[in-house]
Image 1 (spheres, one colour):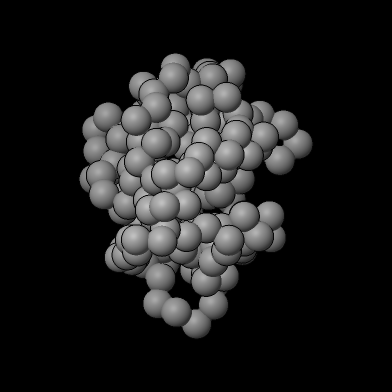
Image 2 (image 1 turned 120 degrees about the vertical axis):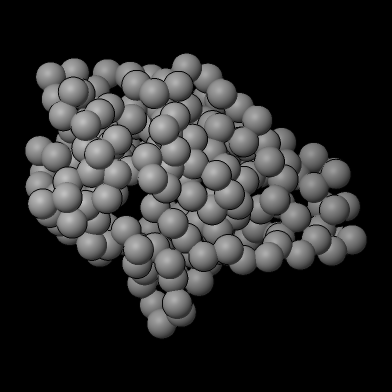
Amino acid sequence: MLITAFPIACRADDRVQVAKGGLEAKLEYCETCHGLSAQGYRGYFPMPRLAGQNTQYIENQLRAFIERRRTNPIMANVAHVLSSSMVSALATHFRRLDPRPIGGAPRGSMATGKRIYEEGLPESNVPACSACHGSDGKGQNEIPRLAGQLYEYTVGQLSGWARVRGQGSAADTSAIMAPTARNMTRPQIEAVAAYVSYLQ
């Protein structure tokens, strides 16, 4: 799940806003959906784990919501009011968190998920997930951490990739994931989602 990098400029007036306690207020707001310690929330609309996520990835995703390259009306409204330095401060805060994964994914297909994650599906033109996301699932820079991500969230994202990612006219490297997601069957997606949800 690769997204284009966007530089985040930090202006002096932005630093003042963050220093005055704005960060704490924003973090409290984030907890409403993403759960305590940003470990994610399992519900009717699964909310992703942000804890331990790579800073550059979070910054890029917030920019994608602002620029409507990623479709989510709630996050578009949340993101468009954030200053550049607040985006950076939030991303840095979430990167430092590392609670245990919530778990709860079905374990029956984890061996299949592990195989797909490590070897891919050559017959379906699906590369090994580990090639980009790392053997530990922690990604790097703009490549997201998958380790510990909520099962339901990962299934939803991979199943609906074309509906929520790479929207708008701006170039978006999330297109790299489009054929991978499209070439996986629902059971294969569920297997990979289950496997990564238990990685720490």
